[in-house]
Figure 1: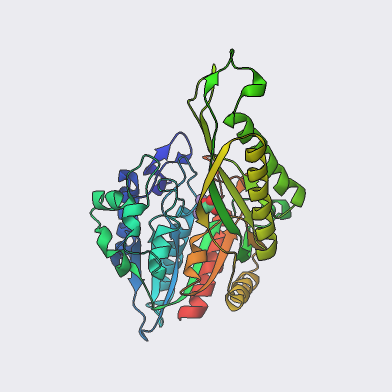
Figure 2: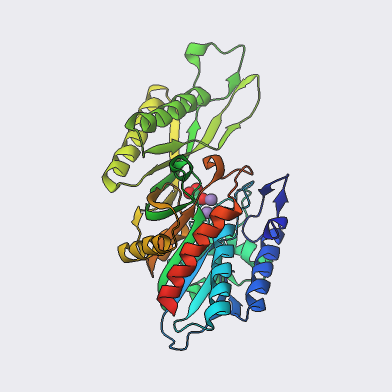
Length: 396
Ligand code: GLV
Ligand code: MN
Ligand code: MN
């Protein structure tokens, strides 16, 4: 609740995009918490905050954390709970057992949601893997056209230095996160140990026809991009629906231009977010979407273009780390189950440079990416107990 004051939206929401003043205030708050328990604190080249307890044996780091940015609007828990969980776990370990043998680090990642910069693609964690090219900051743009380089400069970061955020000294990454779906609640369990993360792809689709008068232009002579978009939107959503779980396709953003009641629009643009955890089924889903979009546009004599803004392979969690998390839950009598992740996560990137796994905690009514998001303190604590025990096993 304290962190959620930064970017508070309505009664229960948060609006905290990357590099906004609210984001700066939240990152400063996390820095203060980490300093307060004696961690060495720094901000990396893209603005992610790191706190560190150096281990007596040195060596590669054991890391936990998540992201601090939000959807616009989003809830209080998505990302933020994982940062708080890592902080509480590490504070508790050092209070109870002193400084660790292995180095423990918390990370509050700068940008996961792509809510301000649609093609930023896990900016914070991707920078850690060294997969941001030097020219990227000037090419990744926000919804209003400003570059992420501008956003970085506004908060005092030098976009020419993104490569300096790269780490090759990480051993483990464990991310605690809210589930964001209904599976734990349906099973009546507080905690999930994540087996793998789905492979999301996002298309920004533009359908262009011709703007005409809504009364005077006969239907049979129109090139109506809204008619094409409506057919495409219904078609892609029904494709995933017919394929059945765990295929999912969502159209969440749409814009008509012009956006007038008495005119056929010239252009309709919308997103298609499609996900599947199985690489082959994922390819089938995307191919069906693309065939359908082309067929509809051709039949209706509409111009069709798309850009792929997000495309991440499914990622399996590290089996040994999954087993350790299961054991940590079992030893403490915390009811849990294995669960897949339908949401994308920084852990997908971190898996390139560290052995990676995730802990989910129950989301009330399975809600997320909405201010209605809620996780009880009891469920959050159950997840943090699993995290703490696993970090204890690895670092002491
Ligand atoms: C990440 O927030 C996602 O949309 O999965
Ligand atoms: Mn998240
Ligand atoms: Mn999210």
